[in-house]
Image 1 (cartoon, rainbow, N blue to C red):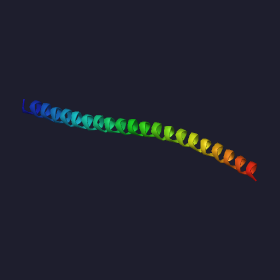
Image 2: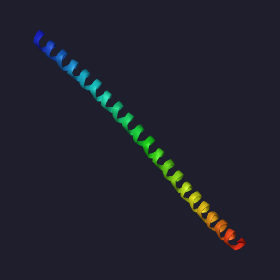
Image 3: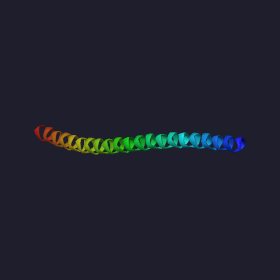
Image 4: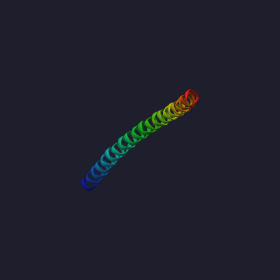
Length: 75
């Protein structure tokens, strides 16, 4: 009977260890998911920034060309 109780205790300890390890893995997974979400958001923001900078550059180029043309006309 004592062996059975010891075996049950060992199984209970193993179950507890596995539960704890599973919890750690789930927490790690949640942490990675949050990091991925953060990186995706950052990527979206950088993409928008790039689009805005591209528009600004295009506008500046157009203005520079117009200014250059006006200067040529004044010569």
